[in-house]
Image (spheres, rainbow, N blue to C red):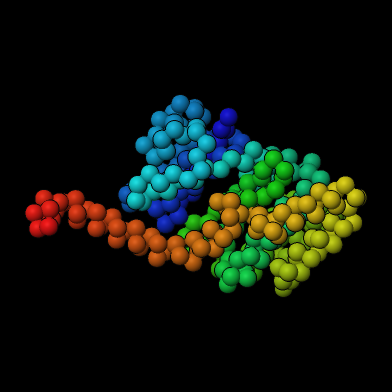
Length: 267
């Protein structure tokens, strides 16, 4: 059962529907209208509200192209968003290996972007969703003209903020690592190596759980909005030009439609 959802737009042409625990949450902008935000507690109202955007909203949607300027992707993360988990106090019960998986996942996503001369324009715990294996998924990749973050350094500082919220006290290893992220010029590679070093001190079972995640993440770039980091990189690099081509197509279609009779006569 879907318990909550969020729309995130990319260049006003693309949308991601993200489901988590809690109330329904809708955020969208269409046709240049002012952004709309609405909390909805009723599945019936929710389906009615979005029916014109997402037919069969409760079906398992992978990729649906509804028209030339709207693309929908559906994902479900039963753990909910990290911000809500932290706020509710649930993360205080997380084991060290669970916290390290979240830290490693976010750090890896930063590294992948840095390796491609990119960075997250906005990285916060509100956009990190947790799946059933306590693995993080970053779902915010909107193309904002002005983002909160302007460099990889900003991303690393935010990683420090996230780790600090996950830490239990000033003396634990997660909190110590958060301070390094926030107050030193530590590189993302060293952060990743330090997370692995902490994990090596876990008991055999927990270390095996962590290493299994690391292997999956490294192999598949598994901090992957839209289930593929390659898609994210491609989107960052090509998103603006792609949006422009969509606009051109829409103009062409409008021209063809409005001049259909004349065009046919001239063929």
